[in-house]
Length: 131
Image 1 (cartoon, rainbow, N blue to C red):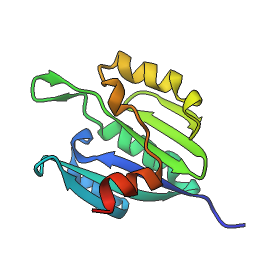
Image 2 (image 1 turned 180 degrees about the horizontal axis):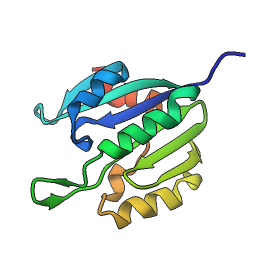
Image 3 (image 1 turned 45 degrees about the horizontal axis):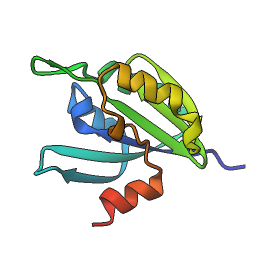
């Protein structure tokens, strides 16, 4: 049986050091919003997953300049969804009813509801990577 592969989505601004992207297997990237933000799609094996998540969490910012700013990143493998914040992670599925706890936590950090959409790989391809 082959090893599970997770697709992850990370915004460059969420990371303190951009050098972390040199250590990841990037499968796609797109710069949006007048060149201000780059979204990275990465692939991570099940064996690497915990290590990569820990590295990304340690490198996540909690402010941009003087403004407090929290982010999340997320991973999909089939129907399985892992939502990662700087100090917490949530296991869910692509079923939106399983997102409530993770969305409430994100809102408690000041992330606006419309950004807590946890797009699937297909949705990310359509929204960001197919243009």
